[in-house]
Length: 315
Image (cartoon, rainbow, N blue to C red; front, side, top):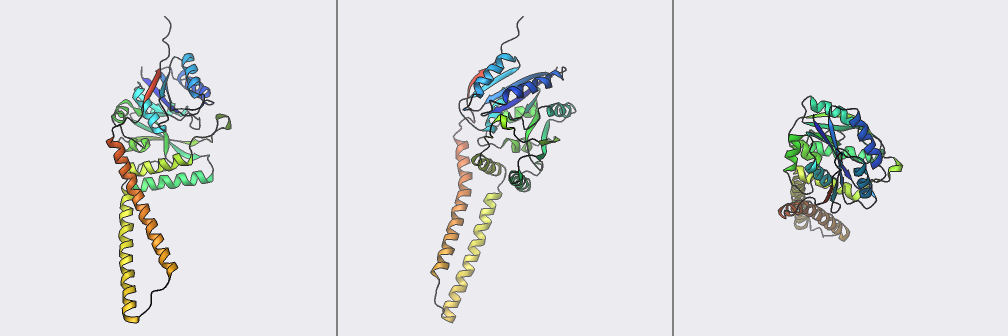
């Protein structure tokens, strides 16, 4: 009988956790041919998530709770859960119930048919026009300049075979973009499409802040694409050529037409523009250098403070 692990990163999701576990229990009840375990990873929550998880683990013997020492980020929390999952197949899903746990049944059918990676890709999302637009731009750029096999609207919900899970567990990479890493491994994914729901108000506000989105964007491209560095080099070459041509034109006019140099304002504009571009290019290089430094430190990508095992069944 196959064991299925479901990994859930938890960060300030106290309100949704009881409902999420109930839907996991319904999923398991409809699939008696398989055994299930539910691995909740508390990623340094500042609300009542951890006490709620402790209570749920006492009620549900299949639930396990992994507590991280602080907030390491969603990707690190999922990777921590993957190291603790024991299943023959391991699914990862967010705790806010915007993704339907019931879809795991269809994903397991694809896994049973031979797929070692099953992605739940978003066909649409009820997140507002601006959020959808920015998301579509991000994934279009990522598909174009990093990993072409990324689904058009991306994914955060997936299922992995034990072999793939072990491969990921061997990669102790910092600032990792886990979704890109799954595709980078090269296993041909099966894709299941669904419409992502809007987060319900009773489950609190999203912790997916603008700062986290910017870091996510940078980590994604720096981890899987040299395009920013190459674009910076190309821009530098173009500016150098234009600057040299402009210098030749000014020198020619000064020598042969005795045109006096004028325009303090235009000079300052050019100086500020070029200086700004130089700082931008240094920032791009700095992102790569910082991540290189972060990797050489050999610090763990997450630290597990405590693991709560459910009590065994009474004889």
